[in-house]
Every structure is written in structure tokens, then in C-alpha cells.
Length: 253
Length: 244
Image (tube, rainbow over all chains, first blue to last red):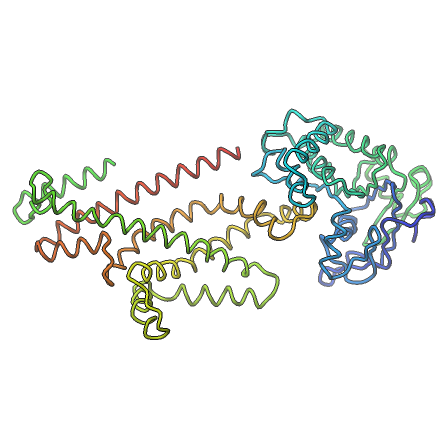
């Protein structure tokens, strides 16, 4: 199931017949997916549908058992050199933020740039401040994560991913662990990011966000991509009964 | 501190009954001062021995713990074998074995100090390895994933992300081991190390007042260890403060 609406250039992420098992449970069933450079894709689906597993396979937080994943021209294999190459091109924002609790906000942001990209302390600090301003919390640079609200922590996590200046950003349910009043501030930052041309894959149930920013909407159920297309099209005329039911359930309230 | 004073005064009272001979360590007499000074002179080696041994055992313990966390079965087996065997040997036996057995077996002769350090460090390293393994395992998987997401390699992930957090968590256990080590260093007296216990032994042989002298020895260890644990607690508080 490929996406016909993506621009006709070589996709930056290519997944072919990707399968993944947890014991007997088949989390991904021969998934095919293309993501174009600059594309903004939103993936939704019921819990256990394999959407998190799918994006975690892209940067090898999970290993797929069969099929091919090609990211930024690199084939993902068991060879750890391919993991390193791909992780250099892919950043990630997690549901539980996963900030480093023993480091200040600034140190959280500069660790990767200093140790991996080889930036000097000064360069790394400057870059970190640039991105902290972009997520609108430059004044929190010297605080520790636990001193911040959930929304602020998630914005720090986004800035941390941005500091690596990778081509692709993955978001794994970035607002699911947040109190309702903090969801907006994180979605605002993500919306702004979307308009900057970054390739983004976002697993979320925030349908308003999906409608506003997504080029492509993906619905997954039971390890399969059930529906894929531009949001206008899939929201107004879902082809599958499963997606229609899902939409009804989450938009009911 | 109150309880030490109480303990000491109780002993002194008992001393008045005539069965005790506190004169051997009476600081108001020149003889008592000489004896006390002699006993305290063992403090240097007790501290040096324990601190050297624990420094080594922490490093060895970490190096043994890391393979225990490996995905490869062979590495984990190495960890298990090391821990199970080393942990099962009594320290006293290990001290005697290193001092007398090692030269006979390998031709390497260690002086009393280094034989003591080696035996204490070796024995403690198995416990340190388990402490480190537990501490590292307690760090959430998300921390590893976050480190991967910014492309940190294994070394940097351990050094900058996992170990700083793990060490904060295991600090109370490390303090425990340091206290334990200070006490266990007394066993090195059997091969002639001139530390606190050895000094007390020698004095009691010449003075025929073992009970009084060993009571002072108990107090020496007590004070030493209270100082150490106060220091560890301060360190804990400091580390927590930097994170709060």
C-alpha cells in the first residue's frame, strides 16, 4: 500500500513488507510505507495497532524480523553501522519525554551535539539556545527537567531532537502523557515545525493537529495500514469501516 | 554521640569495681598516653588499606558488572561465575591465600600491604559488581532510547547518561561497602599489617589487659565509621540537591 500523493521523488523512508513479532503476537504485518522528503505524516490507530512499533522500527529502537527498511538511502540491517547512520538522520520525541534527569535543560540539549557532532561547548550552547528560543523556553536553560511542567519538558525534548539537526523527526504520542492544558503548547511548537519543511512522522490521536498539518494521514489497525491518504479525503470519506468506526469513537466527545 | 558517651561511662563505672584495669589506656598518665598513641598509630594503615582496596574494587566491580548486563550469554556467564566464586570465599581465607599461596603458586610475592589490598579488593569487587548491576538495571529503558535517539555510542551512553544516574542511586550501598571494608581490614592483621587491630593485639600481649584495649579498639572503629557515614550522607544530600 504506497502513498500516491507523495511527490514523485525517491522517498526518504521506504518500508517494504516489514513484519515484527512479539512472541506469537504479530505487531506488524508486512507493512509497506513510503515517506517523502519534507512530508508530514500522522499515524493514528487503536492501542496495540502497531503504530508505535512502526516508527520505533525506523530508528531501530525495535528490530524488524522481515522485510526491508531503507532510511535516507541506508538499508537497515543487523549491522550496527547501519543503525548509527540512520540514527544520525532521524530524531525522536517520546511519549514520556525521556529527558536526562541529572542534567540541566541546556546540558540535555548539548550532550549529543558535543559528543556526537563534535561541536565545541560554545557552538553547542549557541545552538541549544537557538532551539530553546524556537520552543519558547530559553529562560529555563539552567533548570533541571523535574523543575519544569510536562509541556515544558516535552518542548525541551523537541529542542533536544532539533539540536541534532537531523532530516527526519519521529514523534511517538508526544502529547499522550500531558495534562490537557499543556497539549496546546506542544502542538503549537509542532505545527510551527511542520511549516519549516522538516520531514515528520507523528503518532497521535490529535485529529485537529492532523487535519491542520498532515500531508498524509495513516490509520493502522492490528499491525496493518488500513487507510492512507490526504486528511481531507480520509476524514470526509473513509474507505474502510474500521477507520470510520475509530473516528466516530475518538470524535464522539 | 550520646550513646557513645553512655557506653564509655558505663565501662568506666565497671572499671571502678576493680576487675578492670583502665590505667593501661588512662590519658591522664604518661603510660596511658603512650599506649593510646600506639593504638591510634594504626589508624593510618586502616584508612589507607580500606580506601585503596575500595577504590580498586569499585573499578573492578564496574568492569565485572557491565558484561553481566550484556545481551551476549557468554559475557553474562563470565559475570555470574566471577560473582558466585569470589563472593563465596571467606575474606580471611583469601588474605591468607594471597599472602602465602600466591608466591608459592606464581612466584609473585606481595608485601603485606598489597597482599591485604588485593584480597580485600578482590573479595569486595564481587559485591560491588552486584551493586552496580542492580543500579544500572534500575535505570529506565527510555534513558537508553533517548541516548540512542541522539546517536550516543555505548561508551558515552554509559558515561554521561546511565552511570551518573546509577551512581546516585547506589550511593547508600557504596557507603555501606566502605563501612564494611573498614571493619574487614582488621583481618589483614593476621598477616602482620600494622593497622588498628594489629596494634591492639600487640599492646594487649605486652600489657595483659586485652578487654580494656579491645574496648578502645571498638571505639576507634566506631568513631572512624561514624565519620565516614556522616561524610557519605553529606555526599548523598549534595547529589540529591544538584538534581532537585
